[in-house]
Image (cartoon, rainbow, N blue to C red):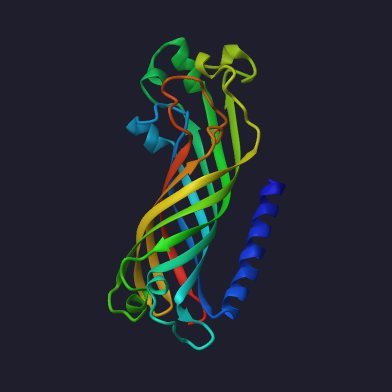
Length: 258
């Protein structure tokens, strides 16, 4: 936990100094907060089982910063009319995700030894991420800022550095005892903290509230370069993909330097 708090503090300080530097370069800035539910697609439960996907959901919280190239902070005026300036923003952010994880699905529901072992096992996963994305707006950022339209859709693609912390226990006793673990999981449990990279892709839209604020809604997909996000990495045919999450969030964005 201390390492996580230190990681967040370093990230906040980094974004703070970056914001000052961008303002000096004439780039306007936006800051915001995002919050919403997440679905974790891991080795807990049947991956494509509807109950599993709904029940193994948690929450996400994000602090975001945008570099807006369409507006110059030092003169309160628009930049030169170039396609990149009018259709792209760079987003940097800090995200936190957490979810409780249970085994749901046909096998876990059975009145068998295997079903009992799965139902007795409980886990959780939490991640802290920092990353950057390139955000594309098909409609003109200038026109949207000037209230020519109230909605502005966007898509984005980026990369995140991730610190993850899995956890798990069984009602039957220690997970180090093979008798308390579903046979497929024996040798595939590691609850150590770790770091990895993730690809983040999203689609969403902004709604203009005031000249200096937006409401945002977004659907985000994070694909992690690890299968240990939940502390499980099983050697089985059904384990065909690494861990990933789907995050649906709403946010409030405030324009600085406007």
